[in-house]
Amino acid sequence: MNDFNYYKSLPKKRMGAMAVVFNQKGQLLIVKPSYKEQWLFPGGAVEENESPKSACVREVREELGIELTHLQFLCIDYVPANTEKDESVQFVFYCGELSAESKIQVDGKEIMDYRFVSFGEAILLLGAGRSLAKRLPACLAALKKRHPMYLEDGVEV
Image 1: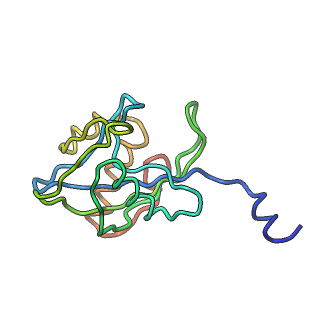
Image 2: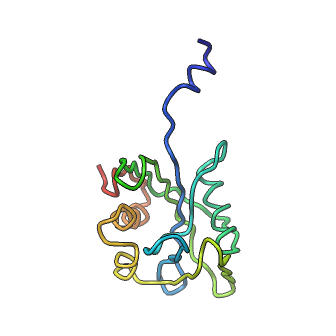
């Protein structure tokens, strides 16, 4: 077996990338997808041969019509398989503060609405206990410390 075929035979993991974005009041940007009850952070799946950072920029552009220019790596989260999904690796990027002039336009297909919310509201709307809600405190701690974190199922290890 040559190297290419060997590497092709190895297991693959699903990857996602999400953006942590604030407004000028320090509130977090969350989005309401058409396909789930819970709210999410902007972002989505990393496509084949696409970097997580590029995926984050692309997904936010597609979902909200805004172009992210400053991305800072915050966290990587290994999420084990559960009854709904197979395992994945989630990359989280801090994308700064949106100015008052930033014009968010939801796509109306994948994303139906957006809100800027407090930390507590975000936890509730993201679904307390879900990996995404568990991930938020660690991501904000990484931002405050200016030091990336490794997480498993939303918890620093």
